[in-house]
Length: 356
Ligand code: NAI
Ligand code: MG
Image 1 (tube, rainbow, N blue to C red):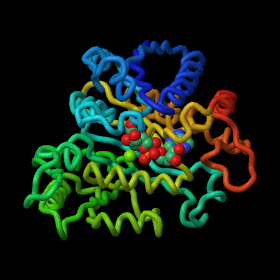
Image 2 (tube, rainbow, N blue to C red; image 1 turned 90 degrees about the vertical axis):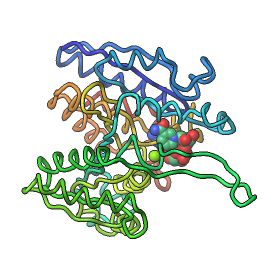
Image 3 (spheres, helix red, strand yellow; image 1 turned 60 degrees about the vertical axis):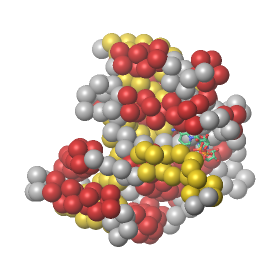
Image 4 (cartoon, rainbow, N blue to C red; image 1 turned 180 degrees about the vertical axis):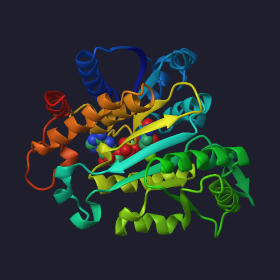
């Protein structure tokens, strides 16, 4: 098969991990006879520096024409003092909105050889397999107004959490559809004891559950969910939640796997190309040093193969190869505790390639 992939390397460690992931895609292409072609485009801080725009129109046009998009990460201290419209994160928010990527799937599992190295007890993390479904184009990250303003003669600021019924319905329905082919359980996470938007969310979740007699629905308040994820993550199958809640809970959940540098994601729309991206950011503290763990991005390409190209065997090959690479004992710095030696970003990829 021929597939065109837009690469959005972005900032910080983004270009480093995206380059590694394409090495793995190339190897899969070679072995299975697929032709993956790449075109790179600017987004985030890099795009601000070049075009004074965090999402240039050429980048967006290229993305719309491609079969799938692989993104690294955006952002960094260099642009932190910029006005809101010239911040790298604005580019990412805009492309999610433009492509209507309302559904961000964040699977959480643990590779065999990391079970005994987890900072959480072995018996708690062993065999974990849950899926966080984060709403991605609404909620607190998109609500208006979002601005500085004068409040009672004092400096203040406002952000807004808004959801329309249609936005809640489609993400909840997506969660139920995914649960149907997984463990049959949806946990809807909200803050319905305080927030009106959460009460609407909960009401709609109850309505949608009527369409799925084979899937059970429970509700949990987000603060409790944060605690339960560490206490007993095995109770969860599919968690579905608001944009900001999902962002925070998935970083937390990465510690079940062992590192933020391991978790992939897929940002999907109803049709059209999706963005496949690690859940981590641009990690400016380790950028340019060959220290980044490429596995989150490599695993994101496995999600691309599965969801965008329906190449299930190829996707499984990548995950198996990651498992074997870790079984061989090598670790990037983020996975090392104590005196164990760490390998570099490209050495980790070399190991994965060996097993494909
Ligand atoms: P971050 O996710 O970049 O880093 C958090 C911590 O995890 C850092 O100590 C970092 O070194 C480590 N880390 C992250 N990815 C890693 C990897 N692949 N291998 C090894 N270690 C890794 O979050 P932080 O530091 O809060 O934000 C840094 C910048 O990234 C900010 O500008 C932020 O806005 C941006 N960001 C961008 C995201 C995106 O593009 N999707 C998501 C989150 C943050
Ligand atoms: Mg995040």
